[in-house]
Image (cartoon, rainbow, N blue to C red):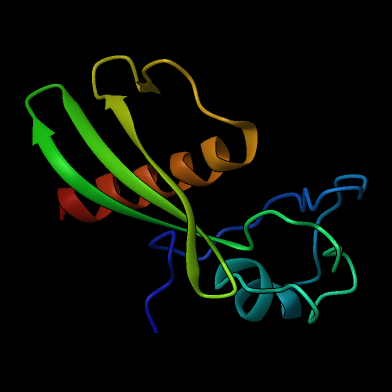
Length: 118
């Protein structure tokens, strides 16, 4: 099963209203990596009105820039969307990103660039 961020990643859980912590390995793929953890993960607030998954796709490549499209989803439906521009020479997203989306976008672009080199 392909993982939404391209690879398996470890990191901190930043569910709303929860102090950041490192999830147990058994929770990473079914909850953290695939998304839709609302009602399945004790740390994900059931009353949170936000997204519960994010998906990325490369929509354009230029010599020094990669554009990502992203979709935030809630209960398997689009919730919000946007575009991010990644500078290959600087190694950063232009204009910054929201913290959680930015961390996940960084993981996705690192996976993408690693696979692209092979």
